[in-house]
Image (cartoon, rainbow over all chains, first blue to last red):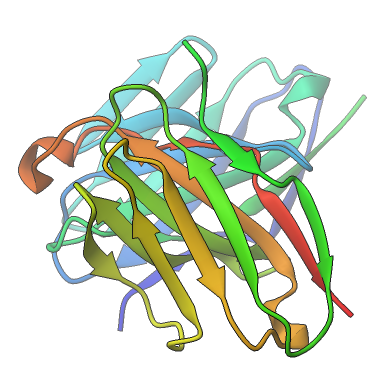
Length: 109
Length: 118
């Protein structure tokens, strides 16, 4: 079967750096997405990786290793508003998106 | 540019009833996907529609169905509701029209319909 694993919950301090990991086992690979979802709101797109390496977008970066079936989302200079769930999703060989259960990130002052 | 619009936002039903949820995609988006989200389960894929045709389907029972209209608006229907159907139902739209081009396009989500079954 297809599977995406993320930690259920993480806690970090305001101003610090946090890395949220995602490992996947899917039938084929056509890209990996990260989304942010605040409580009670819709998921919003953060980043996309299809080639190995690091993609940087301001305070957020996402890394991909296809050979290891592994990605991470790196959040720098954490702010209280970064408290949210972070969802990892992989597009498989049928171009269908397979979603992880999400990582709830709690930021403490 | 208006985002994805889902109606209603909240709905309360009883077991055995049926329900219809509506989704209007971003203007110009032709692909619409539906998801069920429950605490701890993440997003569970229901189905995807493109040009009024179901292109992909998840592992949900036949009680869950959907359709797409010529203006790309979509509806999903759940019949014979069960307590376990209580969830947030999210709709997402995507721009391009072929799977290979779609691969790098993100999905844009509506705020969802929160369905509670009593």
